[in-house]
Amino acid sequence: MKNFGYQAERFHSAVLALMLPHPEGEAEAIASAFQECHLAFRDMDRDDLDAGAREWMEKIEEYICVDAGDDLHGKWLLKAEKLNVEEKSELSECVYELNSWFHMYFWQS
Image 1 (cartoon, rainbow, N blue to C red):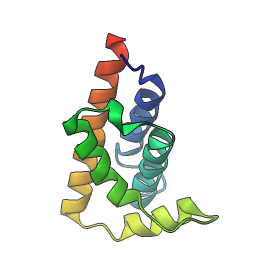
Image 2: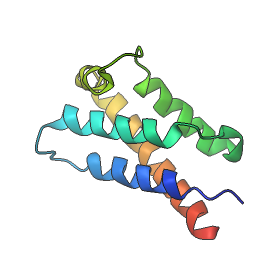
Image 3: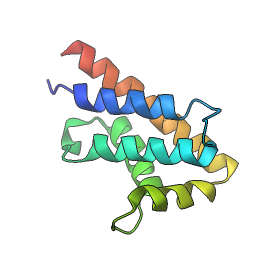
């Protein structure tokens, strides 16, 4: 079974980032969570995920998708500022669910 320790770490950090209030504001909290998710997904084989986890991952990837460049955090910050309440709720739910999923598999391995 795949060890998802790195992903579990990154998603734990993403969950912590989403715990409001953030000292630098809500958009900064979301942008920080985007960063953690991006790191967790980098070089990860999605074939190791079950259907539910892949669906949460794909939804999060839609949120963190920005044009490549030098200032990803700045781009994520701008994107975070534009999210509506429903989008923030969906993003948070996906982050929390994947956090639980990765931790479950990490502790089982």
